[in-house]
Image (cartoon, rainbow, N blue to C red; front, side):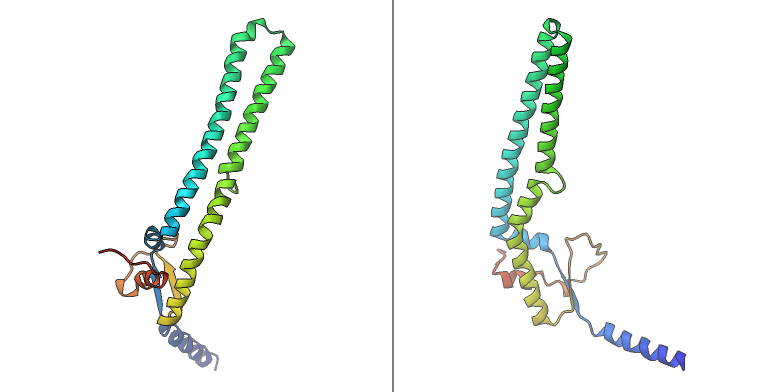
Length: 172
């Protein structure tokens, strides 16, 4: 009895698996053709360049403080030396914290990128959703994501349909 129920359950699952359709897209290719993505990347580069300049300026200030200390070290008392070294260490810590707050894991650069890319990724998601409904797909994978796709059959590539949905025309 248990064996027959198990085989019945197994056959129902296998029929369900065979009826599912899937496809994949290449989001890197899609975004490379989107003007919105190009604009977002230019904005990201602008922000990044400005933040890099700010940090470099702070590093130069620390270097100048060290150079001044080395030049005046023989003229300073022990208390003055300790005070200057503490100031230099404090300034170095500020630069390190600034660097982390901008380029760290949850830094300003990450948050800005997330903010600028959200409309682009939302548009791709919406287009994928429409294509999946039109083509009756159960799954759409992203070839450009961390998922390893050893082999992809071009018949299941829906990148062109998503680009069409987004209004992107590829020049041939």
